[in-house]
Image 1 (tube, rainbow, N blue to C red):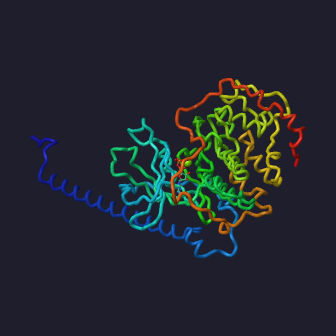
Image 2: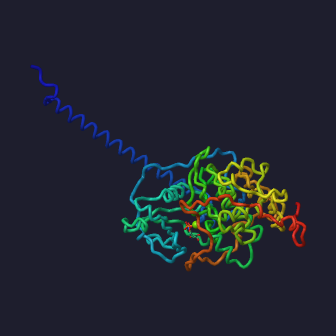
Image 3: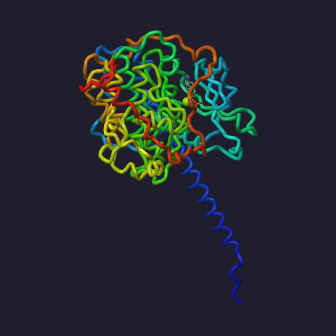
Length: 457
Ligand SMILES: Nc1ncnc2c1ncn2[C@@H]1O[C@H](COP(=O)(O)OP(=O)(O)O)[C@@H](O)[C@H]1O
Ligand SMILES: [Mg+2]
């Protein structure tokens, strides 16, 4: 009788053992190769990092004779996708490696503190990741996006993240994850509130230029910030601006996802299409916020301070005019626009931006006007804005190194703010059938009346 198919002979045993041995050897070889590749990649990254221009230290050691004021982006370069370094997961270090110096911001929402790295002595900012009560089972997607985006971004006008650390009590998720950020002395909101004199035109230009360069970098890398405002813009003592707070940011593709939440961006900086409930939107929402920030730099006051969504919309219409089918084709199709009652008076459809900023050059007022276009399609992209006449006209943007320094509040005591927060989830307010017909009453009188004239430039 032939032996059973399943019976193993001594020969079989020997063959199996040999095969096993061979498999083990191949596996070890593969692991060795992988490790070597990883080492090489790390070395290359280190070299690249060293060669990275415009490092703070470098610019301090070698002030170049001619300052480069032109934007960072190479015009002709196709948009690049960011690299995600796969692998390399390792255990996060503990927050115990840092020693807290003082709170920078402590509110019901967030917590940011100044701290020193105990091993290197370097001063950093620690930001506790926000978690909501119903998120206890895991990290909210917004927190993961904030980490992912900060991890991917490397630009002189974007705040840099050094690492993510965890608290010791990992069972208490709400208390346990911290972003370690480069420490930046000021935020723009605190400076604007405290400065005795307004910024000079050349300073405003430099700040706006850096904000635009940072925004152009984000948009070129498919990131929408969705909460640009002065308290999320940091300024260091060397006149460098850094965009911070990616708690509302996300990656979008082209075409953008069909259904995005319109409940983004702090009310005062929120674009009309978001207020009208648009579901598909793009980089233009950030450009609206850039326009609001530009206005705020000029007056040291937030430009459009609505008390609620309907009031915000009225304030926008008062400044920019009421939309028409010509000025904003298709706006009527937006969810909150269907029941909107608008004044019929043609006097209400023009913008009064130039009149509100009579001291601006026509290039400056023109740029502000373009940024605050009701129709998102008419706002300039960040990349296009970098080439705007406004930045080339005199006075030229003031070199960063010539910027005034300000006493840092972040380096001292904590403070509380008076401004609306970035929207939370599920707070959507509907317009109902809000009536805007009365908002611009009297504009015709204003135009003729004493002390107020529309300047036509
Ligand atoms: N890297 C930093 N260096 C110094 N201060 C910072 C830094 N990041 C944030 N801050 C301060 O903390 C405040 C809140 O930080 P932010 O990232 O905007 O968190 P939140 O999501 O709570 O608004 C900022 O307005 C700024 O004043
Ligand atoms: Mg913030």
